[in-house]
Image 1 (tube, rainbow, N blue to C red):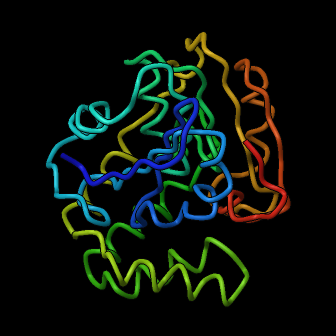
Image 2 (cartoon, helix red, strand yellow; image 1 turned 120 degrees about the vertical axis):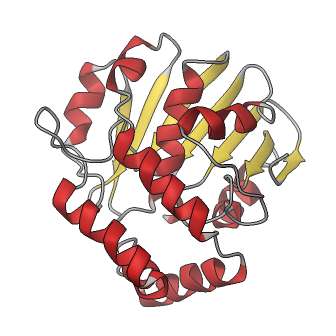
Length: 232
């Protein structure tokens, strides 16, 4: 069983974090919404306080599904958004909200709303050679606020993801193209983007709107949910 925590009372709200981080990154959101929602946060496999789970996106999601109540609003940030898109095609949700996320995180011949594939592949190589330096570099891409960056890195240090989980997560990212899954969803869908995000370009707003999503843009980097103007 993955590590999870539930607080508050009301309709179910489930939050899934991104690669290398843990659910503590959502503490401000939990505090903000626990008066109106029953909020569940989950540490992804091998992240935070959760044990490793070997395998692909299906293996990870089979464990996450066990912790999501029926008719939940599911919020996924970054890699958590990719997982949430997969989950939304498997279970009965009330709403799907993707935050600084895309159904295909790495660019290919028919997709340019993600990370350059050469840059991503080089990052994966660097991670294997020097994980500490690579994670510091990854954290630096999240925000330009130096105090915020230090808090993020401290969080990673407190509950570091396993090397196995980091590698599995990268494999999931590079092998997952869930555009069709997302477009076929009939539940309400929303995308919240950061105008300064260097990982998920804000130009994806047009694609999301064509796919039937409501969209909003906050002046932030890859962490819109830490901005004071963020709202679900």
